[in-house]
Image (cartoon, rainbow, N blue to C red; front, side, top):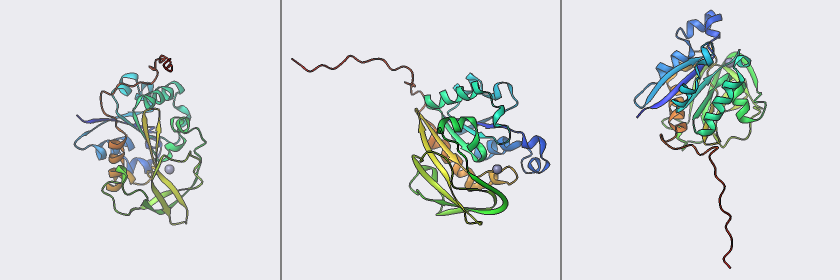
Length: 242
Ligand code: ZN
């Protein structure tokens, strides 16, 4: 049985910016859907402009892992849809937040911090170091891999201390950044992965796609597990024997 992945993309840069459209003619969601699909991973896409942002109760109920890319329209995501996604994470749906999704409502809500960071667009090289080589999300990678041009994200990144830190990025300008962080929220697994500025062909990079595919496999829960969230029953008190 394949892992059911829904790739959510805001999809606005592709509509308004010629440069982004040239890099991602099928949208960031379209590129990810093609790049991530392999045996055992079934992808579908959803975008901001669809009714309910494409994230209906039925779609989320049929999603093992949700991938999130957004940037310029975070505030246009309806709060009730954000609450719906959060509830599904608590129930066990995996969530992978990419790049500028650090400022999305859902990520900020799950983290409980500002999620602010430093940034600079200067076509810099990014070297992504694997700092937890035994982690399943780092499977099949070397000591590091590089992206020839990316936007810089720098510390301080205002997130809670990650449960696991898998990657640290270095940039030509000298900054470093915690670029691969895992969390558990409720019964759901959350993975934040930094690369993917919209003007660079990052989501065609084989190492980036490998990391996201690894993240999908890591974040997916065993199918059929009954969510216990909200179903807890009071126990009889245990009394010492007379
Ligand atoms: Zn960016």
